[in-house]
Image 1 (cartoon, one colour):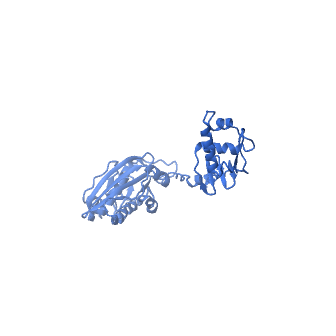
Image 2: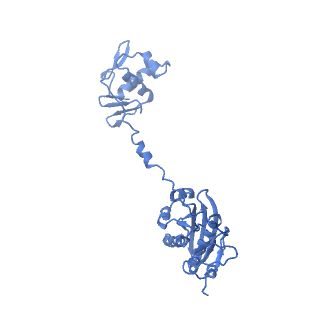
Image 3: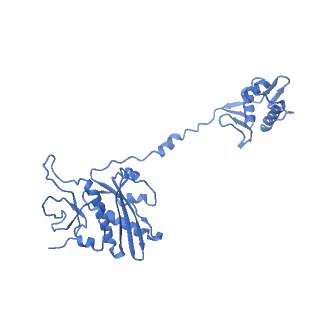
Length: 329
């Protein structure tokens, strides 16, 4: 409740006394004394009433009571001689005689619902049927901000290579790059983008050599499934990127079922774990390898040399990818 008199406002809830727009400095006991006089303005308040209400019944000296009354009068621009607002009644006590209007304080919780709506969490996306992955922007550890474009280019090429795998659901580059420069939790990324796996890493470029580190994280549990470091010269950068993509798929494939086209209820032959294959036209694809059968690329009819998928990372060496490419005849 607020009590308005002359140019003053006494706010009981906020325990403030203001004159116009200025806050009047006032002690706690002085405030309690003024508030008690204003609330009981329709009657004369005795000394005992003041001691019971303001000092909880404790006995205080007459000088203490007088000094507090004078402090109240000074705070509201009154004096003992004028007694414009607080009048002393001889041998009875005192009374607040100013004209007072009571006013309810303005509602301060009206904006709460809108604030809650703004802070509402983003909806959680459901996971697709096929294995899903998002490649976050790699950190540039070269010490040169101008090399950010190089790190971004490495990530873009890895996303492109992974996107060519038919059974893998890959988040687009623009969606992944919204997390650039931010420290985020992999579980949060998985919820916001609706993916099961998250790839993160770093790129260091110095003296014509490149070092790329990558980590594959299960977004559902936050567990690292795979981590590896790849090194080479700038001439080997494309092979490095392909090797990273192959290693990522090799870590995902053993725990994922590759979708195959079959009619419902059709008897399916037993098929071994998917094999990661590199072919000349599409660079990376996957084929299912049946027991004792010749592995051929689904994209083209030419034979291709396959690299079995494995949860363990495959160390890179110069020419490793070149040796895995398919050859004519």
